[in-house]
Length: 183
Image (cartoon, rainbow, N blue to C red; front, side):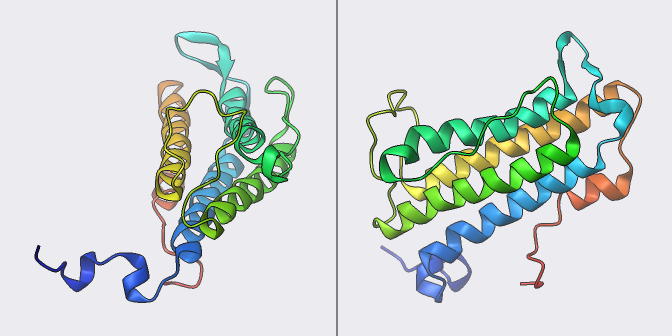
């Protein structure tokens, strides 16, 4: 087997520990999600999604928080991790959702931290019956980030479909994945 070049080494071989390698990307994803929610024009908040008139941008945004709550409850309750309260996808305000997203983001971080402390795997729980997701922290992190990115893209696409395209500066910042420290 040939050695990997330095730029392809695992995070731990370059001095970055597993906690940092997992929690920093989750923090970035949360920051990007919260930024987008804060930039949604008020006129779009209750706009129906084309082709799915019972779903709104508000509902999509609330789904992000509620999904985090469900996963925290399913994977974490047995291990002492308390899931935040879900929000009403029909009534939540952007301000309420932003505060809730910070809480659910911390809850998922706690879940990921648990997995890092347990050798890189979130311990199994009886409530996790779906079993479609491997519980190693790499897969769990990837699932959460991909889920949020999908719905962020959905929100951007719906805004375009409704002729309320988000400014280029806003959509460009969705790709600002450097940490605030510039690392």
